[in-house]
Amino acid sequence: MDGKKLEYKGDEALNELERLTSKAGEVQHEILRKILEQNCDTEYLKKYLGNSSKSAKSVLHFKNRVPAISYKDIRPYIVRIANGEESTLITGHPIIEMLCSSGTSAGEPKLMPTIAEDLDRRTFLYNLIMPIINQHVSGLDEGKAMYLYFVKAEMSTPCGLPARTVLTSYYKSPHFSRRPCDPFNDFTSPDAAILCPDSNQSMYCQLLAGLLQRRSVLRLGAVFASALLRAISFLERHWRDLCHDIRAGDLDSAVSDPACRAATLQLLGHPDPRAADEIEDICGGAASWRGILCKLWPNAKFIEAVVTGSMSQYVPALRYYSDGRLPLVCTMYASSECYFGVNMKPLCDPTEVSFTLLPNMGYFEFIPLGEDGELSMDFDDEDDDETAPPPSELVELVDVKLGSYYELVVTTFSGLYRYRIGDVLQVTGFHNEAPQFRFICRRNVVLSIDNDKTNEEDLHRSITAAARRLLEPRHALLVEYTSYADTSSIPGHYVIYWEINEDIHPHAPPLPADVLSECCISVEEGLDYIYRRCRTNDKSVGPLEIRVVKPGTFEKLMDLFIAQGGASINQYKTPRCVKSKPALKLLNANVRDCHFSPRDPIWNA
Image 1 (cartoon, rainbow, N blue to C red):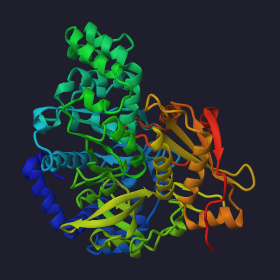
Image 2: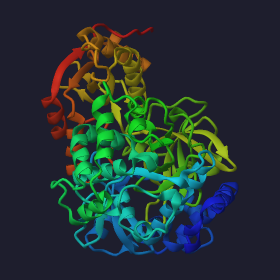
Image 3: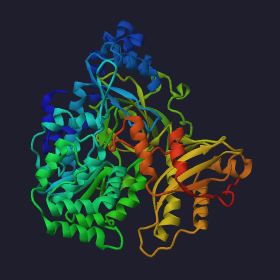
Image 4: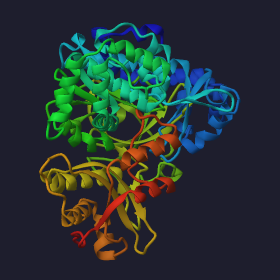
């Protein structure tokens, strides 16, 4: 990708988007040809293609011979490179760093190779976001964006390659630090606050900067919805300290990072008792925090964050804190392995978000998982080689069918070949030749006791439906959840950990125990036919249990996974199924009370 492509802005960016999607098949063929040409001498490709990797038939041989793989297949090569062997094991260009996955979707951190031009591709996608949004929201160049971004202290591989998260890589790159002045991307947070490795100091200073410039803020956001809600929780605990700093024109001594402190003090400037009083009245004067985002940032036009997949459970909370007045905008689809696509309709309802895959980001193929709107249940383990189709049966980007389900497979310039991302997608339409996909779930997040196989989407749907029907009418919000297949007793049963906010209405009574028992059976009756048969007829699965945990438990869980897995707040996603002993120990140590289904779910033979 040449340097000019980094310069696409405004109409030029939209024109390039139209060009790429209008020739998606042609662009994809050329991308694969270039990947094979660049990486033809690698040990990995030669294993499957031999000398044909240099021939005119290399594309055909690739499609017929190279298998779809998971991380365990490529890991030995990555470990060898991390230990000092040449990048030519997998790629023709030097690997400049390893990207750490969040470590919470698949149990442990994964290292993903990166070459220099990968940053160009990510920047190209970032540069499309604002031209797309500007088609739907005007005047965004007249104010600022309060986007809460965070980095994670980086590690090194044994040979000295940086190992860090994909967003830390971007924020520490010249693409970010030397970005041109752009009125559409004018952030309230100083770069030094974003780059502060201490997440608490970073959060404090970014919120302080956002409050100081609150009347100029037109956009609110974070990478994931969960990170924005964590910021709101932080604000609830620290708004008095923040007001004190604004009133005094000085910064809390707890902020000790030199660069972060200097940049924030420069923003503070002088004492501002009037601004402090206004914020204090908003935060401390209301009976609840409903609509707090609109009160503190009255000119905000939308909230930007990932609200698809498991993040969709945060939509009710974001709507509560914005009083339903701010659209929730989800702009892009990306991972540590590759950036994939953009949302062409950013103001759509979160349930309708679809992403147009950009054919120049990598070479995309798909494993079929179901047609005509029916999702097969046989996708419980992304590392199960038996579920991978023969190489020749993968579906190309332009050949996917409307309504069908697929698992995404990607080939990159940096050395991933037919790598199974693990995301289940459904085709919802096309933009020119490029298909649009709805994110369904991660394929390896499953609860199973017997013959039952509960995927993430079904679990999420049943839990949110129960919370909507039984909690929200009683002025309670489901803050967070995760699950565990407890087989310590016979029969085993599903355990769902819930954190509930019962304080959103000042006069609401405590939730009765029978309501939470009804939540258990409501969740069960939202699960599939096989689960309900196992519970009701076979008696091979015991009654579902909800363990209500103390407030703040899931923040502790987040801290635990960040400490163990190398993720940053940006990247963290609450695991929807927990298996690690430290995580279970933490959750169980914070259980407030337990509730079981009072009866069997309805099941008809």
